[in-house]
Image (cartoon, rainbow, N blue to C red; front, top):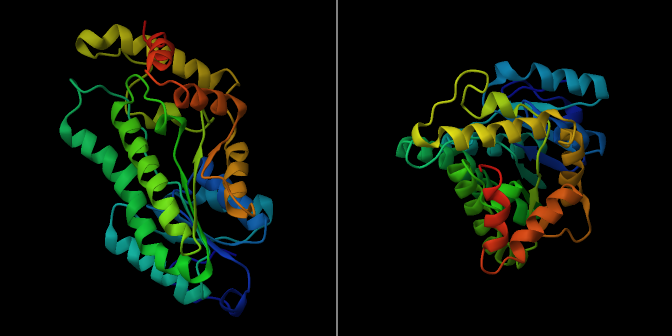
Length: 294
């Protein structure tokens, strides 16, 4: 059963005592896997995406898993869309117990070549989009002592070459949520961030550059080619984590009795983030990431 926004809700959906979770960015990758995993675990799962015409993979994954999803449109950058989606979920399901902020967009570039408009777009989706959804949801999460979970990245802790705008947005999310967490906790809401490393999703298609064609970045062309070759190899050599594996960490944040604030999805991610958190003068990270572009 797929319940699209505007469709008449079934009696079962209206009266179900199941906890309700809203997940953004579920057309593919971690969001899709998390939606299926939450539904399997018994959550009434509202799987949202900006463009409902891209929901085919989500519907197929739900059918293959034998679970029901309530699929709705939500554009995290549009305050009216967010407000309508959250209000609709509460009206139809009676409560909102958790939110998983997963929607986001990758971007590869560097300051001298990017326009400020490019950078603002990255911030709008990856940072302000998270705030839009979280702000609309918090009154409802307070009412039930719920969970606010945001999928960030190891790039929210460690700055990475040619990911300046993306890492800036993810750093901003982590700083905001780290600051919000103790405040929300006073009213019963647990705030967590989930930090994946490389995940075998659609990275190459989502970074906004022509990997197969000739890369051109002016004086940065050589460094960009070195970075892209290294990164694509990481995603294609079988070492990248599966979306389902990353979704297990999302479920940990949703279900643990006392979820940690910061949850890495693999041992590699824990080690990578740990390098930064122990790197008081920044030399360890600079030595590590400089090798990616040398």
